[in-house]
Length: 288
Length: 288
Image 1: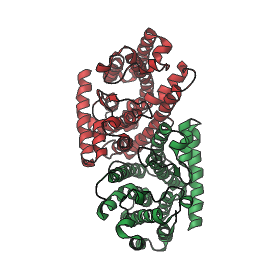
Image 2: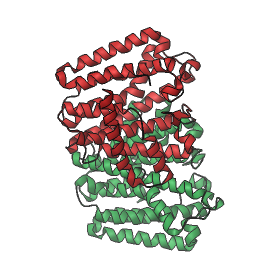
Image 3: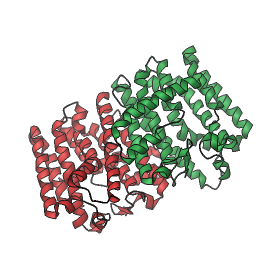
Image 4: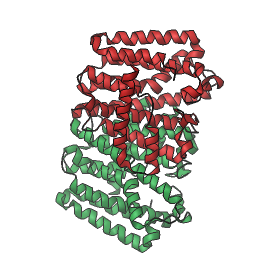
């Protein structure tokens, strides 16, 4: 599993580097390259593996896979900015606004969002125009004001709210903030093939929530040096998290149940979905 | 001309209001509505008129027309922020970060960019998936790090440069900052119909440059109350503009010549292109 993830991560990096080469040496282009480097590439893996399930080769799937990684990278650059989460460290490196400045971070994030659509809609990606247009439309909805941005907005509002969020509210928040891009990624293969996204949607919704619960667990149990970013921030700020609401053991149990649900949803694919099942197990075993 | 522009602006506003209604009452949704209101809607007009030239009705063209207006609105929200141009007034109203805060402005801009793609790729827009995917791909390129964002980045770099930009450099900057979205808009009709974009591209490149020259002229000759935003900023900052490089009369003459070139390029369309020719004349006669 780790090998498969590492291998794909290297191929994603190569593809992104090639796509970003023509952007030149402008500051914003440098910051885009920096922000689009590293990371586990879980979203790209979901795209490529769901594509395989539908007989779409990696040569096609690498385009939307890199598209979703560009989208994820943009969201991190903007979320780290002083007016948002104000983080100085990401993946063990200075964040973009620290390394350059806020203007560069704003613009690099903006351009990475555009790049996400450029790669997703590229004619060498999904074979039919119908699939490309559909992927792009779904991406816009997943990323926007009813998806990821809504989740981030609810998250910021929660910081100044008088009462911590309930379990229902935090689940809704995370469905936008983390869940929407995870679901887009895991259903991308079916969309590329023009097939039903039902089974992959159920898998992705459970996986997305488990992913966020594990993030909350790492925020409590992890070590900043190993994780590569600040930890313990939510607890210090008195923010509700899955751990504060369910307890550490309760959160671990819930994440594990969700992974079981996620894996069950893939039974229609039989052994072909082994990698996606392994990924779900990996998500709740990771320590960063 | 003014009537046609005002009429379309009202229909664009209605359509955008309908599309934004499901976004609810979250702060970011409120800020999106605020930022997407008002303006001359020149870009939408270019989409709808170029569509008519290719027998694409407004019922279809209104989708990408609203898409490009959402993209333009996002760019203004982010450009006005303190780390960028730091403007407090836009269209006579407080800018988004002044009325709300920087986090809301960042997120509203981000979500407006996503909305631009959602509307452009909407199945009720261009009739074929091929045209929708093509429009979306071109939009991503026009908006991103080789288009509009590059222009904005060069503009910010110019502020701290030791020597003012040359005419060639400022023309390159503006081709990204203003020109790329203008060209996307004016060619959208041909793309929707799967036709050649050649004539409309030539028209748009000349028009985009004339548009920016007129902006520079207004910055020198205009009155803040009438224009609805700060004026004289470029001159005060010692930045090169078309007026500082060509003189006021030289800039006017250049803009007028460009409009002639733009209109000439439309001759292949005969009288059907009257409105686009009128628009070009309007662009250099406007005072705000």
